[in-house]
Amino acid sequence: MTEHLKEGLHKDIPLEQYISDPAPEPSLSKGTIKRIIQKTPAHAMYHHPRLNPNCPREDSTRTDLGSAVHSQILGGPEVIFAPEEFTDWKKKAAQIFRKEAREEGKIALLAKNQVEVATAAVNAKKVLQTLPHWKDDYQTEGTMIWKDGASWKRGRFDIWNPGSNCMIDVRTCTSADPAQWIKTNMMNGGYDIQAEHYLDGICALEKPKRRPRFFFLLVEIEPPFCSLLVALDPEYEDFAQRKIKHGTHVWQACLESGTWPGYSTRPHYAELKPWVREEAEVRMLYNEEALNNE
Image 1: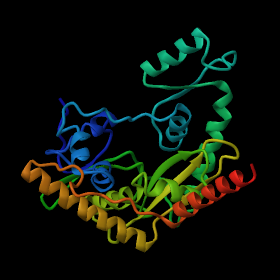
Image 2 (image 1 turned 180 degrees about the vertical axis):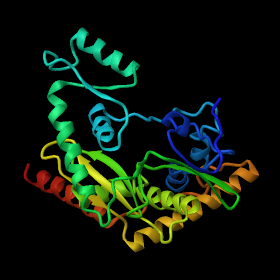
Image 3 (image 1 turned 180 degrees about the horizontal axis):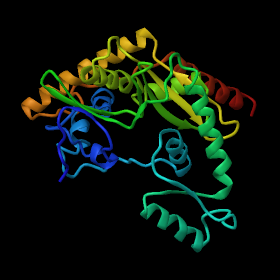
């Protein structure tokens, strides 16, 4: 049984305990808000560990390379490298090496990945140093449990730096191109919700004099191992807060009623978009031309 935590900022809480929801009562996380917004309250309830004992287990793992870079930046599981004769994980001896490492809570990588991990982590740390008033005495992987009105909430940050009044979330990726990442990841991943949700938590618990800034540190795990920071502009922050407010309202109403509705029962109509019509018209025109050329 998961040990329940009191309201506060908690250190050294295992990730598995956080995922199982250690709040005094079922709590609202970034992921649950995202499911309410992007799907339905029924999906949110189904995937919640405290509301559905048989919910699918949330995947807390990353690829080993990404996990190793994350660990080198934040501190975490020990990273060990296989003997140089293991060029891949196909041989039985290599598989045994990796299996034993994982059983000991370590991250096993091939020797050829050592330079990649070190370079990515060093470059990422250099980018962190560019933040105004950055201080090295930051806190990592803290679990936040707080109450917002009648609703319990939780979040787990990567870095909280009180000295520079900012929070960082580390995101390993193959490309840190900001335009592409913002377009494909920000909304779909619910990262706008995460940024504002986590800042709400730290403000409720630590009560900083002014609201902190939230940055996503994008870290490439492929050459040339570039890193950069992404933050929300004020309009995006306001929009994320609207979603959090809506998600919180729906969550609390469903908790109190015990009803978790799915999709609306009204008919949904497919809207014919101009580019859909244009593409179909062109294809039909090509068919007519082909027939006339026979």
